[in-house]
Length: 104
Image (cartoon, rainbow, N blue to C red; front, side):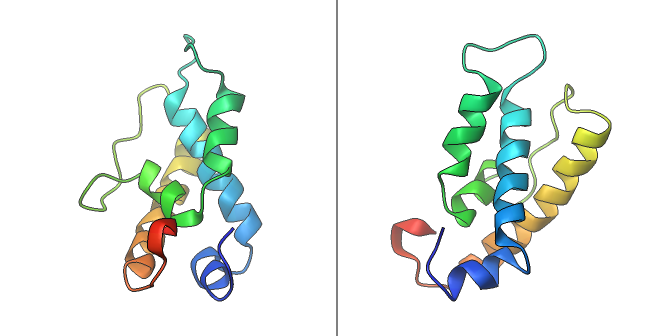
């Protein structure tokens, strides 16, 4: 987590829930149901260790636009992905004006 006031400003009213949402969606994107050499839990754990701006970047392209939701992410997971990407766009935009060093 980032020090205050950054965490509160980027994470909104429930930063822990936002950290979890972004890490879940990252793992969902990385792990199709057909399998992958790295487990879903490992992908989640790696993302969960990163600060919010890094998690946001996992879901955005270099211009700050949401990457396409992978075809294997459907239903509730796709809805969750779109919600996370909306938050990721906001986080990247707000973090751009902050002096976060390598955290941002």
